[in-house]
Image (tube, rainbow, N blue to C red; front, side, top):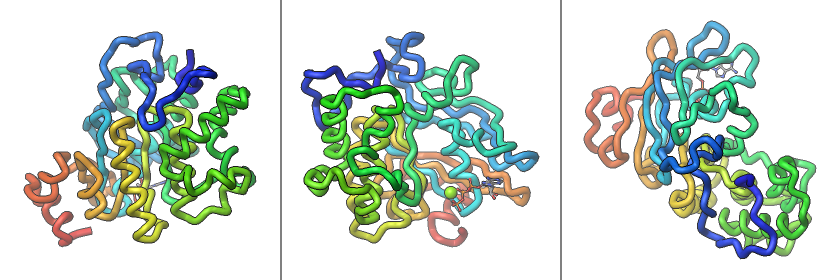
Length: 290
Ligand SMILES: Nc1ncnc2c1ncn2[C@@H]1O[C@H](COP(=O)(O)OP(=O)(O)OP(=O)(O)O)[C@@H](O)[C@H]1O
Ligand SMILES: [Mg+2]
């Protein structure tokens, strides 16, 4: 059984995630383990000889929203891309250390990086619907890649994905129009629909609202709050209010003179913003630095 294909004829709940194997990367190996979230242990990331991240250790709780904040260049995007093996696609880039999802080593020798990227999906800063594709085709692009052809299954996935991404009512009468014909905020929700259509466990969002106006931003923030019961979400944001509004926990990163980014502290979001333990965090969240 794959995690991506609902069985034809089965009614699928719209807002609830279907039951997933505890480890969607290696379902057969750990079918009964609890959902443990992401564990990052002593992670270093390099571009050639340049170390962009130093000794990052932290845990991302399942079914919650974790925000990564910190000054530009401290490695937030690099860290996100290291979590789903996108980092290694940059020529000369590599990681050291460990990333585990539900106890399974994401960098393990038997692990297929393509599968990792499906289970740990990503939404980018600039909405990037596939330009030559309709709204419908965008949503099911991942399902088709993994071999799903049944029209009814695809139709159901489109409606479910767009409903969960809070876009269905706005586009249901124009599914054949190009994804790029939508507004920026709608395009970003389309990209979220495309990401969740393959039933990931984790959604990584790299400044998903930075190209959007305040209203579209609010819409995405509401959506994140709805999705957090079904997915583990990590969001990078430069907007502290946004981190405070949407996240349960926040990790603050900064960098030293060698420009290697590192974790300063991670705490429940309210604590990190109101009562941080590190002076560096205090300076950053109070706007004295960064
Ligand atoms: N493809 C790349 N090749 C070489 N160096 C890179 C590459 N991408 C990023 N870097 C470097 O890695 C470091 C971390 O960059 P990264 O984009 O992860 O930071 P960031 O915290 O996401 O910054 P921002 O807030 O501006 O998005 C920076 O010094 C950057 O110049
Ligand atoms: Mg970035």
